[in-house]
Image 1 (spheres, rainbow, N blue to C red):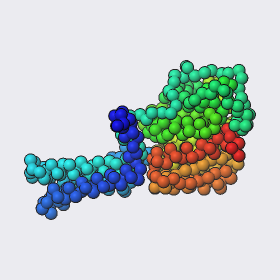
Image 2 (image 1 turned 135 degrees about the vertical axis):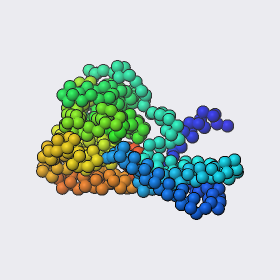
Image 3 (image 1 turned 45 degrees about the vertical axis):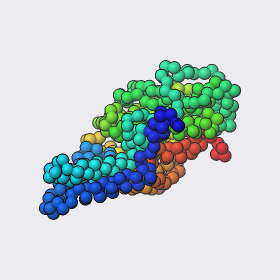
Image 4 (image 1 turned 60 degrees about the horizontal axis):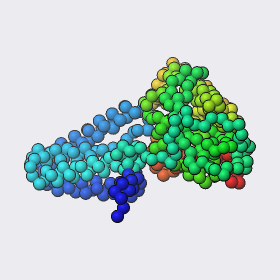
Length: 444
């Protein structure tokens, strides 16, 4: 018999967003609906109409509240989500109606259990679209175990006198006899002397080849998380697992990854601009690269630097790359927008530049691309096939990039605006990023 802790660990890794999980949740919901129908029995049509109307009003209120609270962020309820919420509200109200008529009957017990089943199914459907909790363990509040060790930044080995350098790195890399098995994760505050931006601690990943002696001079991948969020959200989207697998397949070689805070607070909306909302552009384009050069022993050639992100971070990546091709000539835009936005264009321009359209257009990536080409910039746009809001925006950005002469690709992955897309997009593009930044040769 397997130990209990092993069974619990296995259960905690079960997906609650996959196809089979969705089918199971829909089956539970269908059973709940049948139970509610049986419990309702011959309730008067007028009473049923009142319950149904209340469910519609309640669902509309929930959807409007979510829209107002999170606009323009991706946490919006799709038509499928609204239907799931409506079913849950209807189930709750139906159970209340049965309890009011016969509170101690068997029918009341069936109604309560059936309503709970419908609610569980609805939560599962909405969570699948949002991708907030990918596994049972995540839903229970457990942080996934990482495949890289967490260490204090002060314990990270400092500069080495002997290093292995060359482009591509893989052709010059000679792994030492005593190799480091795994990479490490650490956190450190990256100050903003040039921007004045006050950031939360950044997440840093250092691969085995960085920790080995002699050290390989590695390229740097800067990643930005979504909004609302924090740098550690990338861990929930498979960052450590993807990098560990990549390093294991390439003799310990992988990019150094720095995930700076581009928000300043969990739900802040400064956008990746220098504006009235803050100087995030200068922070990411000047302060972060300067800190990396001063505190990490890496390849400082701009060709060995890339930027990427999902949602808000995807918008940031193309913004930074187009406006600062000398700093970030390579980008990975996953589920980003076609322009920085606080919900609508006029409101965004008013909040950022006091309504000055010319000032906004001077730094907006799509406008910049329309004015001048960037032949030295290369990028990838990825969207969820079911992402009805951000997928069209990604297509517009890709068209603008190609029209401006960029070396750009676009493709879609199964899923909506969620980790179902973000995690595999990063894992799938690590190989291209490694070749583009000089870590691997084209033939590797």
